[in-house]
Amino acid sequence: MTKQRIVSGMRSTGKLHLGHYIGVLQNWVKLQDDYECFFFIADWHALTTKFDDTDSLKQNIRDITMDWLACGLDPEKSTIYLQSLVPETAELHIYLSMITPQNWVERDPTLKDMAKILRSNENEAPSVSYGLLGYPVLMSADIMMFNADCIPVGSDQIAHIEITRDIANRFNRIYKTDFFKEPKPKLTEVPLLKGIDGQKMGKSFHNDIKLSDTEEDTTKKIKQAITDRNRIRKTDPGNPDNCEVVFPYYEIFAKYDQITKTCEECQAATRGCADCKMQLASIVNDYLRPMREKRHELEKNPEYVDDVIREGSKKARIVAQDILAHVRELVKMY
Ligand code: TRP
Ligand code: SF4
Image 1 (tube, rainbow, N blue to C red):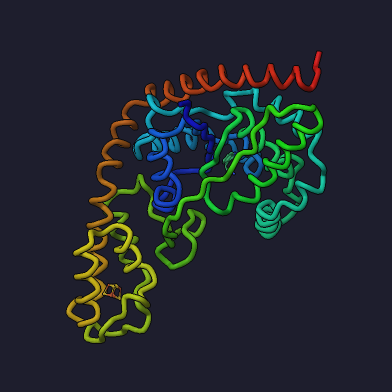
Image 2 (tube, rainbow, N blue to C red; image 1 turned 45 degrees about the vertical axis):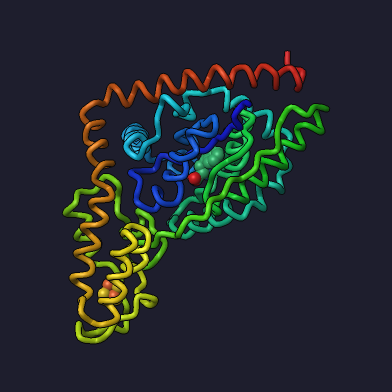
């Protein structure tokens, strides 16, 4: 039986944090055995908002690649590639942009949110570009470039995938074909990992733990994590259900008996929050240690990392060229 095909990507905007790992990467790593996987670094999508800040573009690409490999994405199992090294995607994007009604992109809710954030950051010129408006169309090109069956993404990307399904259907209808599949989002039930301040984890909020942070930095950050706000003194009994960040982290990273012990000692006031956080820091550091060690090895070997990107992109291109040739035929290009 042929394996179903998966495509997914991440924008290269910096080093990845624990939220990326728990929310997305861990899932990708597992999918590698059962699906034919294409994972790519969306450097063009990074440009939709960071077009004027390209000094760090190359380093960001290397960083995300190292984070991926350190987490267990395996170039022997999956095709790991760079979006801009598969320029067929750009040509497909052009055909798709011709058939996409303007109001489909304008009503994309994820894009509306992005535009709102951009507008609130800006002091002078408007920064929502033509390219940003085409974000979901470019994403559709990424997905349709490999005629993927499913897309493992977080729930924030569902609206985009809906547009992709609509575009795929419209292409099929207009060019009288059934060539493109209707790609399905593949959601997994993952616990939401909050930032240490209890808000959504994100690097711009300075509340994230990076996969590549040192153990000392990790410990420092966890020491600032929010606990049960009603527990003032160590002698007050705590309530793990009201513990905003620390206890939920235990539930994700600690072993079963560590979780129950934490719960008991918290409620009996035999464990203080400072101590509880120190223990958590050591659990999280143990959890991340193998990935961090692997990442250090990769940092010493930039040629290998570069090779992974280039070889993966070559492999991806062969598949993409085949699909693009077919698309050109269907559209009846010269
Ligand atoms: N928009 C996605 C994100 O911000 C990244 C992305 C670009 C993507 N193209 C894609 C994800 C295609 C899945 C499929 O995370
Ligand atoms: Fe949270 Fe631990 Fe403090 Fe209890 S002891 S409130 S679980 S940090």
